[in-house]
Length: 415
Ligand SMILES: Cc1ncc(COP(=O)(O)O)c(C=O)c1O
Image 1 (cartoon, rainbow, N blue to C red):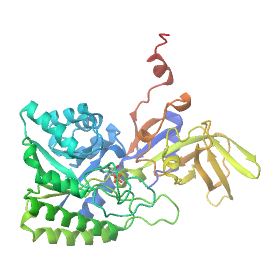
Image 2: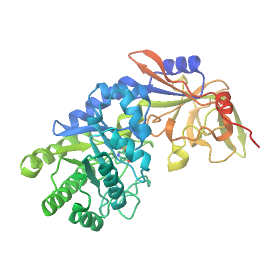
Image 3: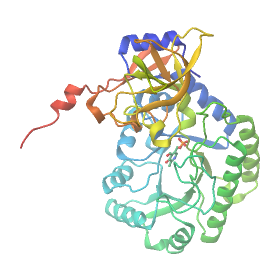
Image 4: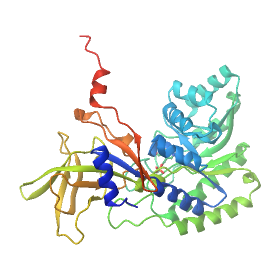
């Protein structure tokens, strides 16, 4: 899914490096591919946190997607991008009072509650505003898909959602919250899953759980939400998610749902982030120089984990390629290291590249999700990267980053 090298070089030449580049055509194609795999019975909601760039959100809103927001900031971004409130869901642990108030006042279509204390706070809000709020309970069942790297946490205790005993207790006592209309369930229990069969199996289990709670506690099922978690390959040798297997499996789930009266009007939702945008993004850096130390070749570049923290955070390197390198050139093993004063600042701990020269560009792939906004750009006070989109060959700035001088100007020295 990577953009042609000439385009990346043109972007880097025009906007400088480091720079984030998104292939907007690739995002649109991804949406269409996934929609085809999900079929008409499932609703596609984009998890804004994966990449909240307004330029991308606007494209996704125009394509008719729903979106899942986790904060009042994401709510503002989604609304500014053109998502109607009715197409928004809200999910996120430890929501502040200000976040809850903004989400309720903003009339998001459904709010996912993460625990009984959140129900208490939402009830207070509903009572104060004289409104009944549509609520889905986010559930944390004791089963799920084991993650290769912990992101959501797989099965087991975690900060997300209601464990099943607390969910049953809350449902049994829901008269305590007269301003809340509990009308659905959400389970998001694993991230970056590449096995379509496991995803489908999990969807079946979530549906069983929603049905059994719905029946036992007489909960109308307006929505059952299976979360995100559709994976993309990061490492060489990892195989992409098999969309045909996903499609066939979900068609069986849809057929089953069609036979179930309780699900007749239920919206079945997926809320992927990574799958739609990860592979469409690249983080482009410029080579500052190379050096050898104790038998290791370092390629030193002008960007690092302050802009793309994921390789250090999750411990999985992203593929790196030399932009414009001659095909068939002799490759050598190098460490790609950034400018931060920590040995953690490696964009790759060991990859095979045609040895680049000072001034060449490297592209770090799969940087479209959990990249730009999952980073820590203040560390070491380097300039921030711009975000640039490419659509049908047209290059356009999506986000002008704050300059270091502006960030400095926002500070005071009162003591
Ligand atoms: C509630 C919720 N939904 C969806 C997602 C998207 O997950 P992914 O990017 O793995 O599809 C996340 C990611 O953290 C999430 O927290």
